[in-house]
Length: 132
Image (cartoon, rainbow, N blue to C red; front, side, top):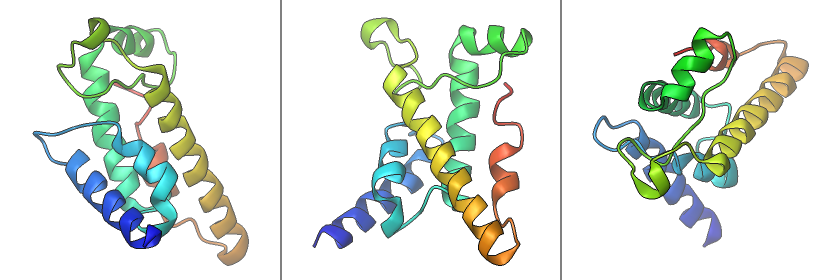
């Protein structure tokens, strides 16, 4: 039961976050927690989801643009675009879970390289995700 529930949650979350009208970074928690049952952190789906969210929140928060101009890497994530709760700022927990997904994806790719000698999706993660 847990596996089928996790599979459903993760698939719905990943596809929902990629839709133009619903970009909610809580999906990253589903990838980090349930990814082994559906879309793991090294999947093309996870990379595409993070790419959409990073791009969205880069435009959403001036601090991301200022950091980008100053050469500070990374993107601070919020809950969703237009969120006004507590001032509408980036959320530390969601930014942290984004980092966790990067770590999990990187670890999976290192393991794939070690086992097979191939990097299947590593480029998707590194390409312009730290720039606005």
